[in-house]
Length: 358
Image 1 (cartoon, one colour):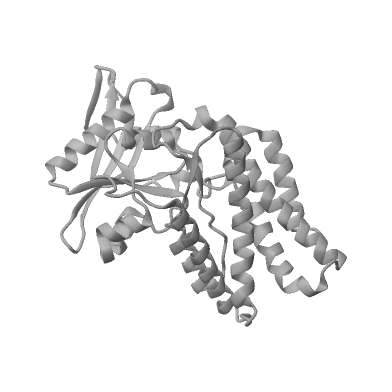
Image 2 (tube, helix red, strand yellow; image 1 turned 45 degrees about the horizontal axis):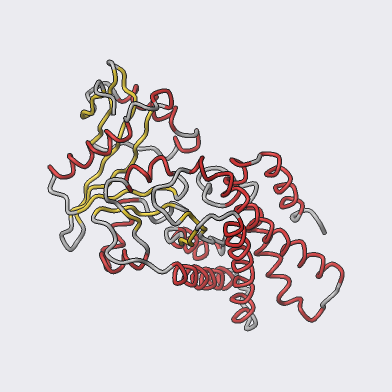
């Protein structure tokens, strides 16, 4: 860290300058979600603000006091100064002075510039199972205060770290089961639930998620990239609200990530890109295959399976291609966009076409 870098509380009249740094650090759509708290740190270098951290503290019903890093950002032009490291260290000192029992933050799964700051300081990702063991019913106010109830593809990093290793297989099965339950809820809310949905929906989601997962895992293995599955637990509350209020639904698949906590996205993108493309191609093939079978009347007795298969796989194909921007950047579309724009355009056209064919 640059010795001339100063980490300090924000002063009166500095919000405008700090907000300008935030705007340079984040995409315009992210600006809509930005908010302040009463505790803000800034990184100052040679009289200029080059970063900021918005901090929150809250106490859970059972008495656990939590320090939460709500936002941390640095000026892209100030890279190499160690502003991000300094802000996290300053946040840890601040929370220690406040008597917090733990410190946490929600970080998007592929945002390794942020997650590495936490991983190198004793934080780890808490799976849904670990959160339930640690917080019990306090998980509800925890998610509310941390906004973890709708941040698709974000993981909860906490210090002290997880007490036991989690199971990727259980996370995958849990993702499948929750998607099944929420799609049932959405169909029921629309008033079109049928007895056959009790078996067709679980099977269809198993096929779609299974094909995507297998394709991604095989692509990673072929490149020598060790990956593991992680669930997107916070997506469930968002989709549950859509299903209950509007009869809406979108598949939240979870995804595969490098096994190590300390990795760099840009360094592994040449391998992550093809892995993401493999998963997207699986969805596209299922969608176009089921469309062709329905259109050609190849298997008329399978229409009860092929129709939901087409509906779910083409919805996922769209999320895995066109929707490559915040707040749904955790789907494969963003990985393909970052890796190869030409491939992203071709895949996106193939996905969009599914919604226009008769």
